[in-house]
Image (tube, rainbow, N blue to C red):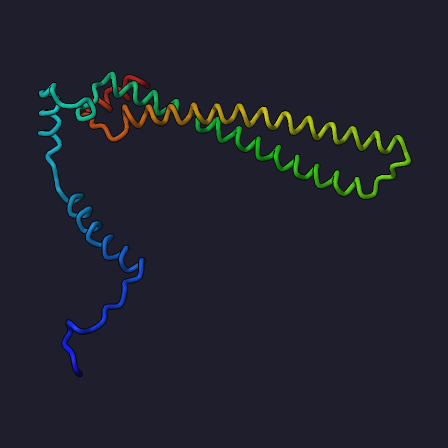
Length: 178
């Protein structure tokens, strides 16, 4: 051996190893941070007493809790409706695709000399075009509905999600709701 460890050639690290080398220490920091315990009652009391705190740091009032529960219920309802409409749209799209394939097969064997056969085929094409127009209209309505869901979700996340509240206030609001 002619050289020390200083003379050895370094092999470049693969991107996966470099990623792991950065990710592992970050994971350790995240785990350590999650293990910190904060006295929730003391934090709750100080947040209620300190009006100078940012709005996102304050404890939700019972009225805000009630509004957040209503927003959450509304969001769930909107999502359920949107998913139902999406399923309808997907079914219509499958039908349009199936009809298009059927028409493509039929046009190959169509006797173009028979006026009735051509008229029947053209009527099927017109019905498929009407299905496409209805599908496109439903997609436009669905996209508007999806934007509404996204807006409601953003509003809920901004004003309610990850906000602190007094458990007793939540219980009282739920009890009064029934």
